[in-house]
Length: 146
Image 1: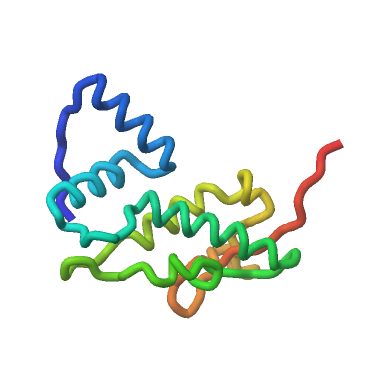
Image 2: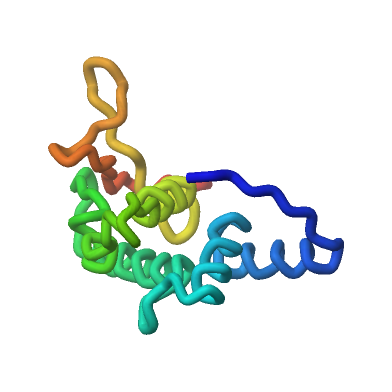
């Protein structure tokens, strides 16, 4: 993927910052989505990255309600929407799954995922992965404050 620079006005930068923050995505993902839609490179009825992320987060929230402390899961198991994200788009590898995975991993430990943590191997401390190289997460006991 090629990197392109542009220099937005102060007003445009503020609008992009606000939109990206509202949608909880990076400015890069926001601009890419807008341009793909503008140039007709995204098929109609295709969800934007922000819309897909919202669905995935909602499905994960519902899924973890069914789990107990120490239960492990990955995003492919927790979200049907995540599982169905195409790995290739327009003949090129799609980064949408990876992007959503990174966004989710930044949200763990914070509301509403304060009781989720990344699983680590007990021997070497490395992140535990599935056979398909997906990060494993675990439900942990919620910490209480006095």
